[in-house]
Image (tube, rainbow, N blue to C red; front, side, top):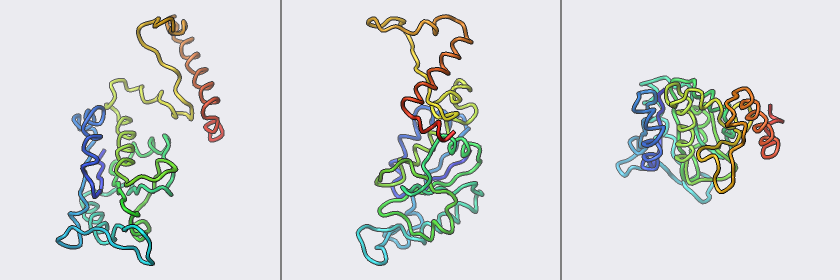
Length: 226
């Protein structure tokens, strides 16, 4: 998979994409992530990519011209399955959306900043708008890092255990069951006996029961969306 990211602060994406599972995915050649500094397409020699908004009001807006030029130049090199813009009024990101995006070949992500991007870019170029929650951040870089991580770990060959991602929370609209590791007894707090039984059928039944109980208790809305 190839992911391109447009941003005015590329430094914010360096660390999240250079360690742990994302580093493994990139080192294996399973995921290519290129971060592009939007000022490369600035409207003048001062690197301008934003301007005051029409109608007045506080905050700058990212201009049409740099974004349009960047999108068109990058699109000429590879066709994008989705051009994604991160915005509070977008579709709330969930596991099903991540699953679908992980099957794509080429994605372009636009990180807004200031008061956002000119609406005309959203109307004529953006194919999907995504929010990571009902709150406002300083820009789209952190949401981009989150989405890249969520997608990257689903790519075949990235995780050591190919089935691991299938049992994450929100797959099949349920939360993951509790997990335990050594020691069996820590300060009198013991691992459930069923997990020590070696009976795989009973273990799977226990995990399913725990998932359902935890989901009903903590996120009953997931059952309503099923």
